[in-house]
Length: 337
Image 1 (tube, rainbow, N blue to C red):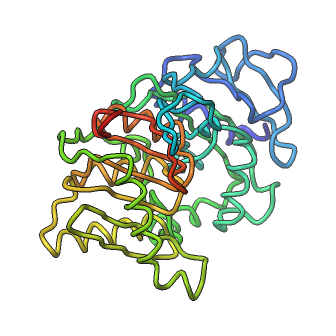
Image 2: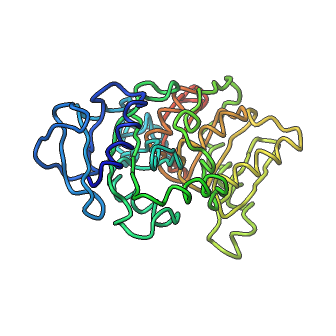
Image 3: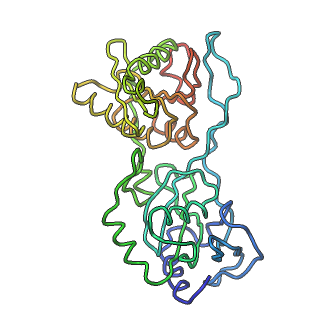
């Protein structure tokens, strides 16, 4: 910590903190040091060297664990039928707000580890700072969880910059442009990143063989992938319709597919949405929002995606390939499940 100005800025943000007092810790972000009183008089703070030698502080109990999700899928289908064999654990995913000088700059869906490096790297790559020494203080805290998933921890990484850099922050907010494939472009609050869950109607049911047909149609419809494999695809399959859209961004591919279905008057709830990518929470949100109840991906979904799909009533399937797949939520849409 350096300078009275940084202390004042930090304390001003704490006064507006929606989380309970003492509701956060640095977790894996900042190396712990000896216990010291916090600047606002709270006991139990830990202090350590943060980015660029900056002192970082956080006080209170540990960040609470999120909703328990099984490390294994509900069931796994293979050519021999259903079993309960182990599968790779889904990666953790959390909404992490980047707050600089008391102003939220972005919300990222990220694994909740090494958040000091994330915040410092974000500030560097976004041009908010030129060197680590531009950061005078740093902190990682737990904040009020989103209403959509009240058991889920939400995190803020807070940076305070040396005097004279505030103008650059204001200019960046006026000209924010989302990077290619960004799932939360322009979102700067955790509440906006995790809005209320949109429930999905019962809708279409599929046989295990239909999952294989949907993934086969997705592969056959990837015309641009044959020219360059650096591209994602999203597809819709039903016994009557097969439609595929591609893009360098997986979120863009799903948006294109949603637009194509809407333009043709096709009900997304009448079939299977299939994607070549892993399934993160923002893709689950988009799928539920258009009324589709069955989302299939080629890779393992994140833990937050599983939790969100469960809350929304959406059937989530991962690692769909070569006649096998993992079923994570709402098996009622899979016939014989």
